[in-house]
Length: 261
Image (cartoon, rainbow, N blue to C red; front, side, top):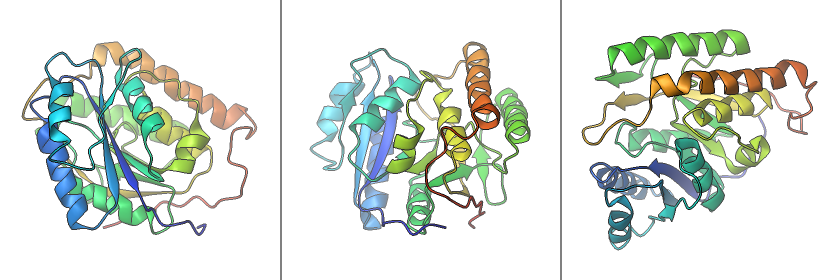
């Protein structure tokens, strides 16, 4: 594993569309946990065309949470576009992408930070390894999730079994090395990690938990996303097997996978 500089400023990028009922709890708990652990950070919440007062609420929360840095996505809306907007705005030397609906635990953000500082360039959480947990996961989505992730694992020949989960961490050089991003919607959640793996960045996995939202409405529409996920998966698969390494990072690396308890 390469010796890497410690992460001095951790950016957390959170896309938010009509999340007025969830985002205050998400950012408060995140700020409390990161501050208690002495982690320098910024919380980049990207308002993605909300119509429920999310943007005004974020402005109010800035006086309470000094590390909150709201960004308004002025371009076309979409989950992936909002994340890219946040990645463009972040100041940190590493980033965690997480959801606004409280489904992701701030405790695991601390775990990601610690693994990044052990020398990994990416950290991928998995809800489906020993120590992982899901609460109130819709049964039909769970079945589809496991089938899609099993297929991705098979066609890319990788150990990761929760690729579609958005909640992951990357050093800045990984984000820059995987550009340009072309997925405008939830399919960005597979584009970034698959590109990072294919392009040779080091990565670790750790168990994480997930719980269903207590407020608001889920934004992922399965009927709309199937072909978009397939397009991105095939796009990166073609890079892996037919680009002759043209997009791989320039320095030699050793790829490792570790299950951190």
